[in-house]
Length: 134
Image (cartoon, rainbow, N blue to C red):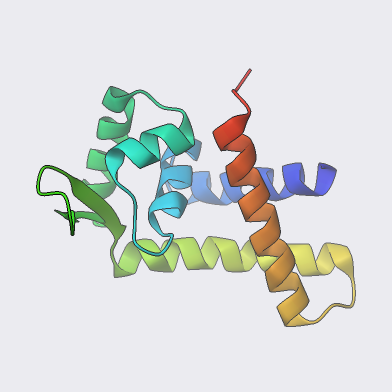
């Protein structure tokens, strides 16, 4: 668990260095998942009120990292998706975390490190979804 906390802390510090709040950066990473996310999905995943999420989403849209597109099957809804710049920021930070993870683990293949980073990311998402914040 210490490794995961360290990874989350490093990600947060990198996000802050780039001008993102921790919550806005977590939102960007969730939106960067394939297919993006609806605002209600994102609010649930991040345990945010709809008003707070709307503010964060608008900031990400204004920064050019996220766009709002029509939902493919629900005409009443929309999906948030990353732009090229949003995807680049997410990839840079996650790539840096993968390198940090590789340094901490010692000799491992790139594939093994990538798989472990994905597992840690998934574990973190599941914990955020099912464990209420203190």
